[in-house]
Image 1: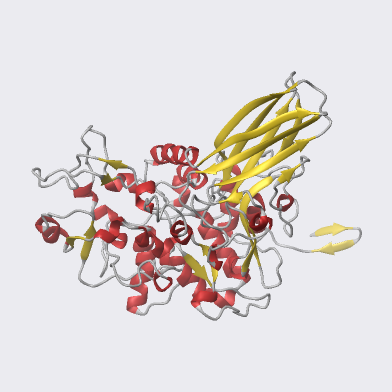
Image 2: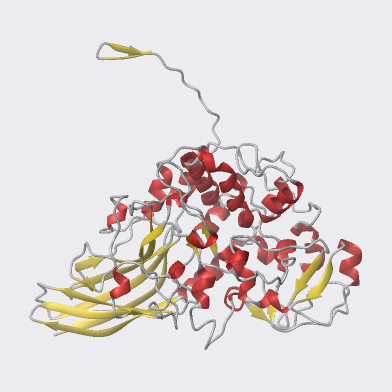
Length: 542
């Protein structure tokens, strides 16, 4: 009983057992040795495809390298689980749509088998993530070996009809690989799968199956407004971004060439012992840019049911990829009439927009100016420990966002490269099912990307569209800082990547659900919210 100001109220208190700061019990990791009608778990592959070395004696075990990737842990991803809960909270009438769309690529084997058997599709609350569910093991094995290597080279691969997890898998158990002159008998006898050469496993269109994703959108009443696949919202389109760049045309490089390291002299199976070695072997490290989530997996293995111990290696490779993603160079600089004037060029080395894919990601240009005594006289884009950025409108007001800049003159102006979703009322939204358009999309374009001819689903949106020096491969930003009467200043420019923007996170954390609150605990504890891509420093004198 509580009495305040003469008013009494009775309430009950339930004390939860201490779960190390988490609301949910530690998750099951699933059994990677499962088998189903069409699939076999990764644990059944490692007997032959681990313990591999290249010509230099370096370990290139396929299952080990894959095990600590986002692909292997796609159904363990706590941000994904939290966002599924939030979307279900906000549009419960579309639970079937959410469960289907969100498992086609995050729990693809469970989704495929459930559809084939006519079973209900459910993720949470007794669904695939429940250890007692008959599809749990296949769900937790993520984007696994027998999923990717059974996707057929069908006419829809790399087209709208094949996007959003609409890959085709046959019933003949053919395992497609990049090499000819195969010795298939051991695999056939031991697994029932037949290794088969097909060039499409080396082509970007294979990756497009899940890495181009469109989804329906709804109004504030939950009514679906999109009417055709073409009209659906382009939530993630890195394949189409790549297709519109020089990486697909004049300087061709596939997704696999960039995201899978290469080495020579590898026998792709450890048995039979006399198997010939292969060159241009694709290491299954599948490196991306999500250092934050890899850090969370590594720090919360028990809670998330993580089975791999290989995260330090994958995190190091992720940091290296980020550091190769872009550069910042000074184009001009002067100090005249107490005004420091300089222009920076951000150069992309990435085969799609930077950042790309899921619209929670952003890249911040952090610029600091110090005088000859080392005092900060100007700073734009300071990134704080909690992931917020000083001066960015979205980080203090979830209805606002920072515009794209061509000229910056004050500290509260920050160049943020990002995609901001808008709903059917052209208001900022962080709810995926409300996203109808992009109010802003100034993500750094890949080389060769022509914003004037870009299809509508990968268009540039906002002020960047009319910024003449925001072009394929680069962007130029001018800084003019008045009132500086010193004779020498040091400028430092950092390009900083965040997989989860502060505003996107806060919108999620305002929602209810144990998955959401547990992810919040993990996110707040992580020291990997931000990663520096590159740093450039130079001096300007009178």
